[in-house]
Amino acid sequence: MVSPTTQTAVERKTKVVKSEHPSGDKRFKVLDVTMKRNQNRPDALIEVLHKAQEIFGYLEEDVLLYVARKLKLPISKVYGVATFYHLFSLKPSGEHTCIVCLGTACYVKGAGALLNAIEEYAHIHQGETTGDGKMSLITARCIGACGLAPAAVFDGKVAGQQTPELLVEKVKDWL
Ligand code: FES
Image (cartoon, helix red, strand yellow):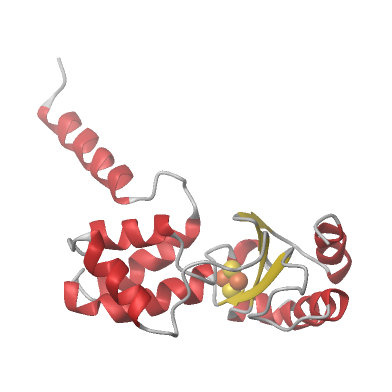
């Protein structure tokens, strides 16, 4: 028989697990901080979407669903706001996506050099897609992997301790 104390601890743990995104992607935790700071208020939607775009580079469907659930808003409302404002982009237009984190921890560890290397290699700037539509290059502010700085995200997978060489090597396969 489970003691009341143990039960409370189990319940608490379940609650904590439930509040996280099932993917375990740490970027959602960063987003959680913004939502919590705003007490998960629905009227903080635009600020939250801004933050989400900063972290993820663009607003993928999964992110919109997560925000809707957390702020207790209908997905139609969240989607409506995200599509109404031009500053939000719902998906990168490239077949592949490379996100370079330019948050403070990554920046001090050389994220600027990473960005320069990939821009030079792919002949595009941040926010652009290669002419053949193969890759979009996006920047973000802190993707929640500061311990792995400098970090990048390749098609949704976070990669730490990046160097310009590693980064270019990775995107070579795409281009
Ligand atoms: S600053 Fe890059 S992961 Fe936090």
